Image 1 (cartoon, one colour):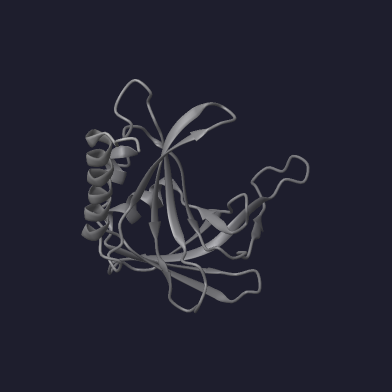
Image 2 (cartoon, rainbow, N blue to C red):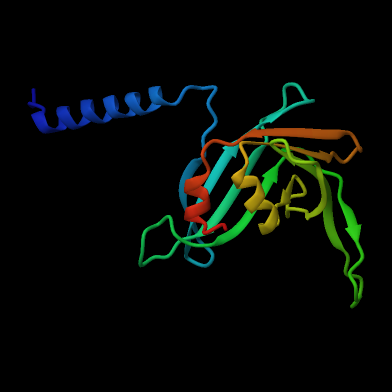
Length: 186
């Protein structure tokens, strides 16, 4: 029988204890921004993704909606510095797409939009047309709206699914300082 080096045993035990301790710090009911470092393989471009899970108010049994903020990553500096590449809210179901006519038409160009109403904390409800995501399951959050959203403690977003039924999503935003600073959101 071959002896197992003590260093391997200590690293394995210490690593699993560290994972268990980190997992126990976040309670399942507490929302938190999840950070992941990603790479766009087509362009060999690294970026940082922040993801926050939300919940549906009027839908039972559906997968949780998510808010996703992607930021560029400067290779020469800290990986959490940069600017917003994109921000979106994903409903996980087909959203109703409206086509908005541009001011000047060249060919048959219409912009796919998602009619959204949202309310942050106690502020009045705002109505906007956000660009539809490429998958038609999400809506792209404009930078001005993202700045307001990241300063809030909670947000309710209402859109319509492809049948016209309202889809109400709620996000309890934890401290978003890391997202605001990492993505340079003013």
